[in-house]
Length: 320
Ligand SMILES: Nc1nc2c(ncn2[C@@H]2O[C@H](COP(=O)(O)OP(=O)(O)O)[C@@H](O)[C@H]2O)c(=O)[nH]1
Ligand SMILES: [Mg+2]
Image (cartoon, rainbow, N blue to C red; front, side, top):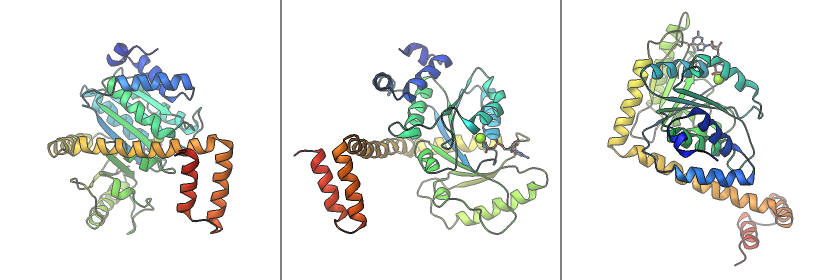
């Protein structure tokens, strides 16, 4: 049983227990978790959900630790949820992240939690979404979600945060780095990291390149993608960054985008969960599953149209 009052008071042990509950794949835990989540749905949503992505080694964890400590010094409460889709439950590279955030982890107003991969409904994305809600209920002001650019995780994270940040390294060439298609359009901010020492000039050049490249990509939002340089060896640009985030929040709230975005994210999520539940139903029944596999073959061999196959499956699921 999770003590709701303790959770709301910001008790980190209770928060950790609550997250373990939503991560559990046991049926009775799931029921309990859903009850808990329903009881915290209406909170005043003052938090800022920040997504951070970028290739391994770009400096995400170091940046989050620095920015986290900077926010803590300003009396904010900071939660970090780190997703590593490549690591099994016990955590491979995630452990590295944890040790690197030692300073932040020692702050009483910080909470750091790696998210293990799992095959539960909605996978890591579902657990992270629910963990975000729990952190909000526990009164955290900033919830930072770190993800490496593996698989779909970046897109999933972009879809659960208020502000999405892509970290890249300075590069001297004319070409933009091999950034996954679509990520640039999702980014609210591109942070060119390790802008220090010999790389400072390169970073400034890269910033100029991205700024001009962004003039031709379309960002379907009221917000124009920003490009900043940063070095975690100093704290020079953290104030600028915080101002950018608070400006974003102010503008988004004035033009109603803040809550609309969260609402849309929830609705999209609802839709994708329904699809997942239906697929799980198909696969949970031996005969529907084998027919499903056959149909996949038959569609491949052009023996049946995708539409007809879909209707056939849905007829077996919904008897009417
Ligand atoms: N020079 C320099 N090194 C950095 C900076 N940020 C991180 N690093 C180093 O880059 C390496 C990878 O950093 P890490 O935060 O683990 O990257 P992540 O894989 O993106 O989380 C570490 O050795 C850091 O010390 C920076 O701003 N400047
Ligand atoms: Mg990391």
